[in-house]
Length: 360
Ligand SMILES: Cc1cc2nc3c(=O)[nH]c(=O)nc-3n(C[C@H](O)[C@H](O)[C@H](O)COP(=O)(O)O)c2cc1C
Image 1 (cartoon, rainbow, N blue to C red):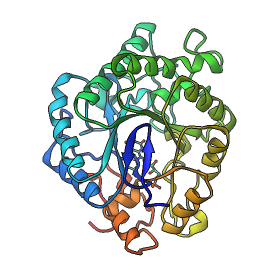
Image 2 (cartoon, protein in one colour; image 1 turned 180 degrees about the vertical axis):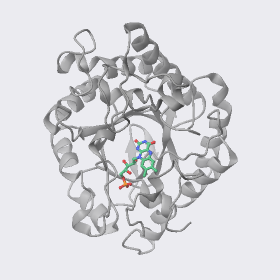
Image 3 (cartoon, rainbow, N blue to C red; image 1 turned 135 degrees about the vertical axis):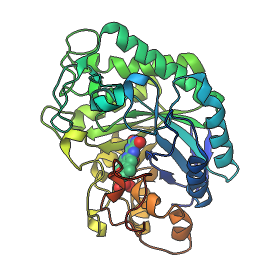
Image 4 (cartoon, rainbow, N blue to C red; image 1 turned 60 degrees about the vertical axis):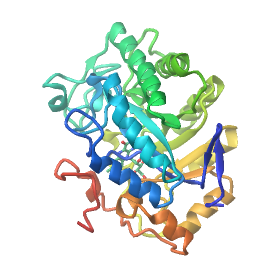
């Protein structure tokens, strides 16, 4: 099944393998597309993956998550992004853009020394920073920036949009009772915590309608006390389906929870696909396509997930940093990715580019 095509809300994907969003550290200092970034994406497209989701792309300057990340907060970015989508399309892959605002998890060093903004001023022990609570005006401004970014993404030729609603970034922060302590339109109960993502959804549909699919990556669990748990996440997923979201990628973990998102030392098949039980739960309760990410390393595990109906597509990040041509190798008979899940690639503060540190 891995190499059967899939139709995601009208986008024809050549197989079931997705490159999960992976920050590249290859944009220039202002966030523009570079030749090095295009080469990375050409390698991935040539390597046979069906759908590529870009690394997280910035919608508003107050939400920068990392240096040299791609940006889309003004129209100036459209031309370079068009070069990127053209290069990918010429090699037969489809590409979705991942839109992000980092909120509380942004380092002040990336914000000109200012504290990051967030739904509530909840101290983050992982970054040792207390964010500033957003004003109502700031919240609406960020929502509008997602809408405008979606129009630019459409003009740049992306096949779809993925909201980064996982890993403790701003959308996740509004959804989670741990980070959203507000008592207004934006927080206080499940329904109000949902308003931020709901307004973003409406802003994007208002800008581009249903011209390209709109999907979300979200946490099944935040893995922190008072954070999102699978059953509340499932309710959120049902609300998103009710709105009209086209697919959900199931992930987990925030900065504070440690290495839950990208778990270490996945060396045996029984350690793989560590969020599988959550995608199974979502698949059983929802009708929209579900993408599973997290620790998928073997062709047989990937096949088994698809055959047992526990996900519609499987997504990989770290293995494709090491072997961008892994899909072709799988097709030729290779059983296991070479990636040893050491997370050297995540140590990007010390690297010039995001790359596999095992192969230099
Ligand atoms: C270097 C690196 C950068 C990442 N950047 C992003 C990102 O921009 N957006 C995102 O949603 N997840 C990001 N992730 C998380 C991955 O998409 C994925 O959820 C996680 O690594 C687990 O999948 P894997 O076991 O296949 O690596 C990143 C992971 C790594 C290792």
